[in-house]
Each structure stands twice: as structure tokens, then as C-alpha cells.
Length: 298
Image (spheres, rainbow, N blue to C red):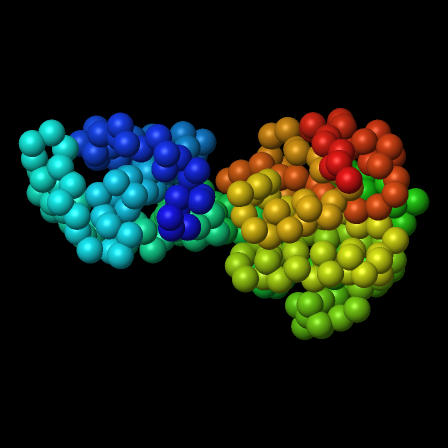
């Protein structure tokens, strides 16, 4: 079974999948996407884009597990009395199926494809790929509102020793004793003490920062840490952090970040705060006002 099967976890139920209905659903969602783009409805547009990609992923999973042989050669799969052939009877051709497979075959690629499509609507979806920072510089800087910073500070005994992915402007609010900017590259530095981290959300940086954080947590280098990221629970980088976190707050709604010129921007999905430390009760007390708090079992 391929990665896409593991991602959707639906392969067992696809024996009854109707490919013609599946293709009609994809076509319908493409029309819905165009409609909401024209109507300038950002919320419905992003929902339509994601639903379309999920429908395409479902078709590819059905094709790979029900039509194709495991060695990749076409099988003599029949539906009723008709042989299913790519590019005929309303089915996509093999190049389209391959393109969907490549772009949707794991959670990270799915999310990148989703963000790439959203980027085609820059005026409507102004916050397409820069929920925090892409490279911590210039027009791609987006900072966390003070209320969340202050909650994190209170959880970590009223102090933040380090922000390893930030800028001088952002630190006016974070007020960390020590910071690493893009020039200093926090990935190459040692982390210690009480850490606040709102990492770059672009790949591969988000995964690299998650990996480094987990390594420091496992090595017991940090007194405590609060990390703010998108609630992309299906991604590997989120899963590796959640596996060593002590508590997680899933934010209600979406955070309105701010930019260098005090402009505001709202990301396309919700956020989560991951806590690493001994003050779990304090984290619950401070963050439950922002959303649902989950204590991670040992």
C-alpha cells in the first residue's frame, strides 16, 4: 500500500467507490472554487480548495489500490461489464492521475499543494504562505500578538530566555533575553532556558525547527518551552513535537498576526500551542481561555 493509502486511511472502504461520481464531485468542487473566488469569499474558497484536493486524493487511492496492480502495471479491472481505462469514459488520463499522486501522496505534499493553490489568489487570500515568516525578513515577517506572548511568559515563571527564530522588531513584544535572527540562524545555535518559538512555517524550515526542538527536549536542555504553530496534526513535524509535549492548546478560531508596519494578517488554518515543561496546571490556567487544552498522557 502506498503513502497515500496511509495518509487517508480509507483504502479498505474503497471497493464500493464510484469513480464517475468521484470525478463529478471533483468537477463540481472546481466550479465551487471558481464561484467563491469570484464572490471573494475567502473562507468558502479555502474550504473548496481543500475539499477538491481531498477528492482527487481519494480517486488516486482508489485507482492505485483497486485498479492498478501493485507492480504498477494496468490490471484487467472491470466495473460491471466495462474495463476501466484511464482517459476514457470520464476518467482522467494517466498523466493527470500521476500528477495528483505526486502532489498529494503524503500530508506535507498535500499541504504544500494546498498552499500553492491558495497563492494563486493573492489579493483575496493575502495571508497565503506567510502565517509567521518564510525567512524571518522583509515583507514575510508576521509576529504573534502580545496576549499570547504574555500567557506563555507567565507559564514559564514570568520570563523568556530565548526566541530562536525571530527579529529585533518582533522581540519588542517577546522581550526574550536572547534572540537568534535569520542571519544568526537558530538552527545552528545551542538552545537553553525558557524558550518561546514561533518558527518559520515554510518547508523545510518548519520540520527542521521541530526536529531541533525535540532534540533539545529529549536531551533535557530546556527549562520549558511554548511553541506556536499551525494545527497541522497530520504532518510529521507536528506529530514529532506532540509526541514529547506535555500539553497542547488548540486555539479557537485563528490568530490575527501582525506585520512590521502593524498591518494584520490571518492564516488559512487554525493554530496550536505546544507546551514542554513541568508547569502543566499553570499552562492549562493561562491557555484555556484561548481554546481546548489537552494534557498529553505519559
